[in-house]
Image (cartoon, rainbow, N blue to C red; front, side, top):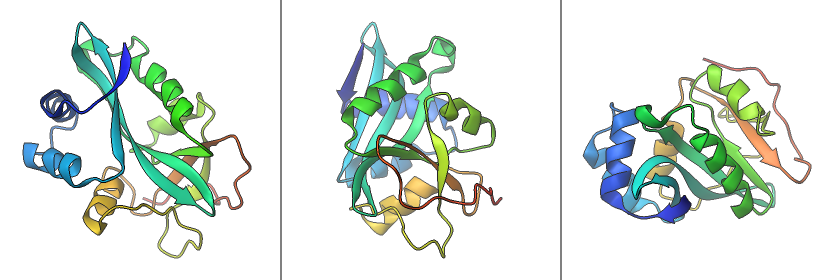
Amino acid sequence: MIEFTDDKEQIISLWRSVFSEDSREDVLFFLEKGRNIRCLGFFEDDKLVSMLFLVDCKYSGLIGKYVYAVCTDEKFRSKGYSSALINEAKKYMKDFLWLIPAHDSLFDFYAKFGFETKLYSGKDFGNKIIFEESNEIIEYLYSGSDYTYPDGMVYSIKDFPVGSTGKINK
């Protein structure tokens, strides 16, 4: 079953099982300080086994959701739960979904859902994603990638006004 959740203990447990480098305090900081963040979860027998976060954002006059911390408990992988969550997330977007794949292998995974590499997040890129979050939360959102200036991927029902070179910078 897919639904939004604010069950902090289940979120923290799943998050830390997948992103073990993050402390309980790190996750609590994100959950408590984020203003426009919602957790979409996949539950099996009332247990949160897969999740992603949707963070409100804007880009060049368009309204979107940033997809963050997509993860599935190791025991429940390869069952299509993350795929189901990504498809469900599309129902909650207005103009676009945007994400930054954490590493190379995920570009192909997200491309299966119609995401395209379009938004380059380099420091000199003119039209940036805008979050209505504190600077600390914004830094948190960018910290999960292996790249210094990562490429973003967009799923959109509208044409995006600016695209990247598609060059990935490590």
